[in-house]
Length: 157
Image (cartoon, rainbow, N blue to C red; front, side, top):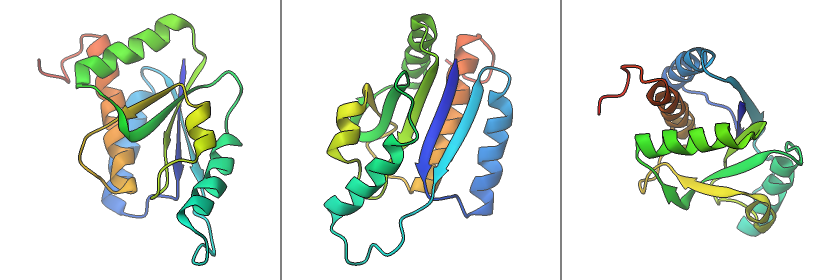
């Protein structure tokens, strides 16, 4: 199984870049992981929130294959603890899904078209994190999930 993370805009804080790189390196032992960065929209000052979501949504949808299992990282999504998230990952592995795509949306969330295309919504927390921090948190939880599945000592129960 491949896991792909689609995110809008790049990480610019060095301490977050280093953390992301560390978890990406660790993930290579478990899965094929790919991150796709969609550049932030330019000249959005005169656009409404709805117009921004539509433009971002079109860019997100353009990065997907028809067979991708799409999971939106969304505040209204299902919350898991780490063991529950590892169970979710195991179900995807068992289902034969070739690629699971997680998406971190823009500041205003996702367009209706992206919501319609999605297979599931997952909330990392009820708290709000910066988009740059979410990437590292997600990668750490993904790594943690696979260590749980392999009964490795990273996660303490």
